[in-house]
Image (cartoon, rainbow, N blue to C red; front, side, top):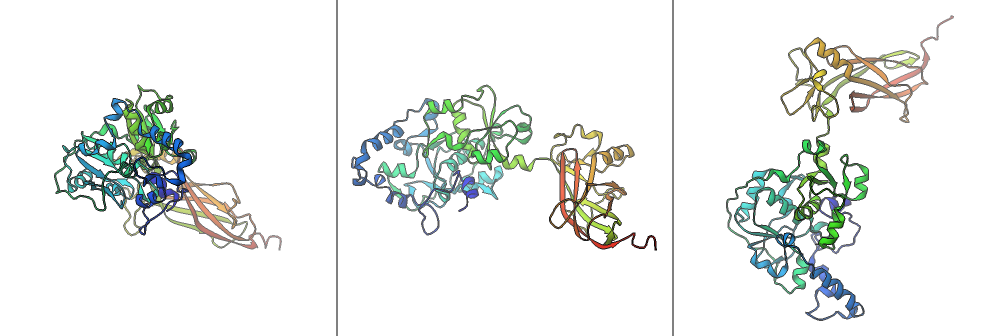
Length: 472
């Protein structure tokens, strides 16, 4: 399992050694075999650990004796009270054992290609498992493929709260804690008859792209420091999701208050991670502390960034091959992204629409000054029908050719290309270079948004100068 998958599933790194079963899932049973303290009888200290018995007992007591406030205790249920909470739901991926009487929904069932499924699909999954919106539910489980971790459980908890489920809680501990408490387990989950699940969406638990970029809320990046450093939402602060955990349990509230002391409790907090799973840990703790917290994902932020919605249909150079010192005309034609060359979508003026995907006013100023806006989700059209609009669009939409040698180094300044027809641009390159083969990149840009088409052409320059016969 690689680190990327581990992070997605709730573990910051995959460097920790784990013991796997034959199906590559971490088995709590095998884990306990390697930890005699989890198999010791009540009051018995394993012989190999007797020298550290006092330290371990103190640590164990500090975890078990966590004093939860009324707010935290309303969600985090101690193990001894589990059977009074209604349906027990294990969300682990391929768990090898279950709390006796628990049903199972693999948390990955709520995802499709790492995206959260639609509301109707989520409701159907819960209903098929025998859960209605009125049933009390207690969630527990871990991210088994990445060595354990409670973020998958808090994410499913968030999903159910998002669907409007009122009576849903989390077990304050995991399967190892359950076994250590001498509670019964089974190798197979219980199966309940299907029910109808009717959601009542709580949209204020999910942040939108428009809200995040408004800079109204405080932004918390729940990923690790390395990912935060490699790119983050502007103005975000980094509080890794692991910082709220002591092992696999949520820290005491005094420590959590210190952790979030820099946040303003009277402003909404948006918490994000790659896909929102790890961020649910921070969201849960903030919510229990009285913050107005919402969940978001880095993936959604990236997908909504403005981008040019164009492809390069064709590119040519004349002459090619060219003599040294020759004037070479480079011509390119654009087409709308994902558009087949056999089925070109054209406007009434035989003009392919060049667009920017994303918010129509994300950093460009007012788009009405240079472009028309389509009816499909805030897409800015670079092509325009009026001469005034077209002239301004020509000034805003720029195309540049970059000529490189075989090593990838630029051999001349960028060649500014001019529009010669609706979708066609041309520029001139003076081939005052050594003989050889040269590659051409095309860069299209509009204000701060650009798209590069690498290596669209190869131009061969021969050793013969076009001036070879002068003076003869």
